[in-house]
Amino acid sequence: MHTRAYATLTTPRSQRIAELLKIGQPTTAARCTTCHAPFHEVPASLRDGKVRADAGVSCESCHGAAEPWLRSHARPDYSHADRVAVGLRDLKNPYHRANTCVACHQHLEPDLRNAGHPPLIFELDGQCVTQPRHWRERTGQGGQLWLVGQAVALREMSWHLERASTPDPAAVVRWQAMVWLVQRAANALTNLPPFAESKSEPTPSNFQRVRELSDALALRTSELAWSPAFNDRLLRHLAGASHDFAADTLPRLVHACRAERLALGLDRLFVASGNKQTAAAAAAQLEALFKAVQSLPDFDSAAFARHLAGFSQALPP
Image (cartoon, rainbow, N blue to C red; front, side, top):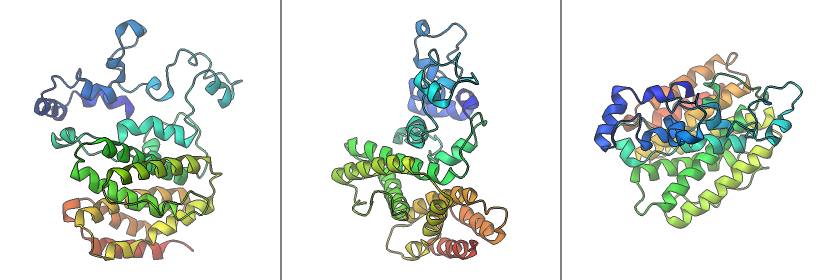
């Protein structure tokens, strides 16, 4: 959680990563503090005397500079629009929320990953659930948050690859997996921008095209009046992807990365559907899907396809 972000920098693992990268102490190195302790990047002259650089990820990291809205944001006579008008960042809007979170939760430079930093997978709905609830979420919005988050994640992945002189092969594989997932999700709902013309070949023009398509998809999805029918259609469409894993025409790692993202998405959509407590058979198959992606190098595509078909068949009518 955000409250432990700075504490992570004091662990032996963080110390070892910093040693390998030769960046000094992780508690003061900008490569680390930019996400784990953002106040460290703010000059002391611009901080209130009570604000410490080791505060970790604070309210302002997500909600914007607090001076304009701090005193008024808890007033019962203020609407959400009133709070936004005085400077509070509008995180009720899924697109704005995803844009606020994605920078620290999605991209990881190859040298950080190679030094031992845990992989980052941006999953907006699931990561919001882990935060202490200090806001009211709209009922049934989980599927919308998931899809907006995935589209924004793909946009960010495309942006970094588009600007890389030599794209990182591991990042390309993850990007190709995300193109497949987001394209399949977008095509499940007819009232979303088409994603069919996107290409997964790792070329600068395709990185740019996918970046544009995914941003348009995220924005349009955030504007939808999300309904249980949308969530159910999306869940069933993604659950019906077993044939994509039965084929052996793709490298194992591409299949594994697809499966990893898909399992996370199915979980969030299944929870949002409200069936988790009543569809025990589907829940058991979902658990099997998660076990199948625990070790990506050992991923068994055929086994995953079988569990995915079982999950699809076990969904309540």
